[in-house]
Length: 108
Image 1: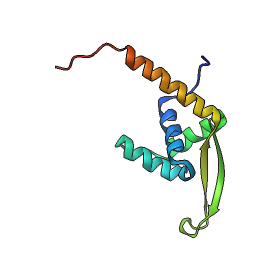
Image 2: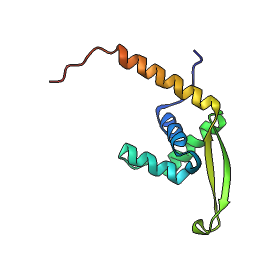
Image 3: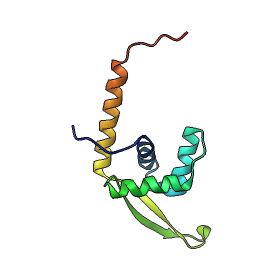
Image 4: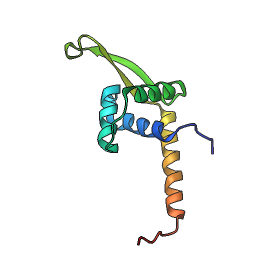
């Protein structure tokens, strides 16, 4: 198996992009992750992860239309590449195999 360079936070951001589809832009990605993780995240951490993953070929991006609500600014919408989908599937398989191999842990 090809070794992938995808950290835990990047994996979460990438999965969020896939979940959000056409709504996958910085602020919405941050909101979705904060809701799911139950913690505050910085916009910078999200933007850094998105940039790294775009450079690695996991994401592509394009600007959406300018809106009055955003003061004429356009959103950068992110999309996962086919490569990203393959890597996420690999990560899921690895995690599933490891969870299946773990002995039952008694809770006391």
